[in-house]
Length: 408
Image 1 (cartoon, one colour):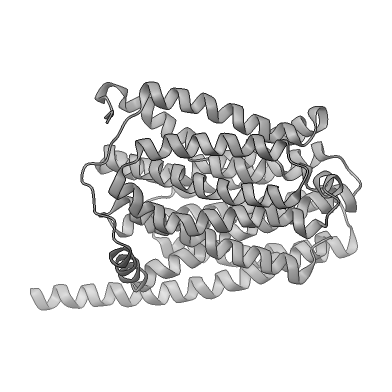
Image 2: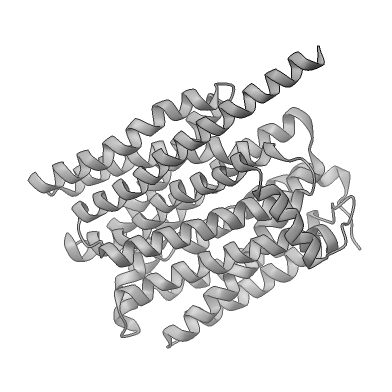
């Protein structure tokens, strides 16, 4: 098997970071096409939204298991196989005339993206250590946030000039280019293979999920990410049907949303040495206040510009919170890199999909006011999780201090 050439470590690390946002590209690039796809397939708004949800669900569930698989069988060959299947499924979607086929291909894409992203996160943990590893793990969510900035903007442009199918042709073409680069510069990096055992896997997951602060971290990650997904699901219909604007505008608005997430992540990284409790004491009040301002302002003055400004601020806070807890989750355990990567990514995806789809289905978000209501519901859940997290970590710090005093 081809192993990673040490002289290619730098470029293969860049490739790893280039592939980590693939999940974001797969979810965001075709957002501006939602209304057009509903008309093309002769189906409902909910069915088109479901193509995004099934991708997230299949990716989340898969990440729970592929972490152990890549720890057992390696990263390199599985990544190449997954990239190939992802490219082929994108071509199938672009040539499909059935929403059922699109849904099936999106499930397959969710599985393949899970393999790719978990493998590449584990790759970073394989080849880097110490401060460099801490630096790179703090970049995970920042790099991931590049996709929500670029993908919908590009998708709106492609849709406007070449139709919704061009989004999936672009995904296929870009993936083929990455396959070539992987073949040239990448290689296997797993140092110690852990035999795949389903019962052992469940036992390992159970032991980590019994660690209360880690489990609560996954819930907070899922909740903050669901704010982004709810906006992604609802905004094309609010902008294109509610405000009567084009898919290009949807793409531009989504670009600003993604930029907000990136800004929040950068602020979190810049304050990486600040206590996590001081961070959430700032983020919490903003998360609850901004949705209220959104609802009130939209009631008196339904302006797209005002909505975008408030969503931008809210997503900055969401990105800040997500990055803060994402780094905490990865620093919580150092062994079984693939399993930790899979459990973190899969857990937050499953929670995100359940929350975001439940909220969009129950609230029928077709106006800025209802978008504010959705944000407020999620914010209340986040605040409750924050309070419990502080309680748990305070107790943990007290127990550690008591143990130290006894040892002395």
